[in-house]
Image 1 (tube, helix red, strand yellow):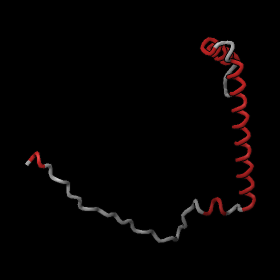
Image 2 (cartoon, helix red, strand yellow):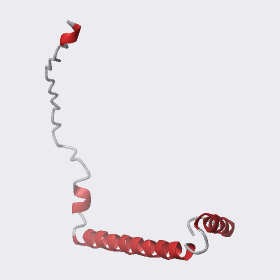
Image 3 (tube, helix red, strand yellow):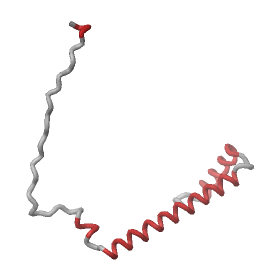
Image 4 (cartoon, one colour):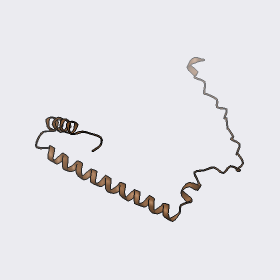
Length: 92
């Protein structure tokens, strides 16, 4: 789970027990579990939506990512404005 071994999980639990306390730890774990469940649900929904879009329009997703080879290059224009800085009357 998340690349953590049993020893690391026990250490994290003991540190949380010390800093949070035994009364608040179950509430925190419940909230963390619910948040993780909602995150997984949202990730699954996003993944399903992306797969459905890819099935419906397989060329649209990649069409705009590649610049056509024969497309003429547009010249970049740079606008430089002359800006006068107001003179400070105290330095006159």
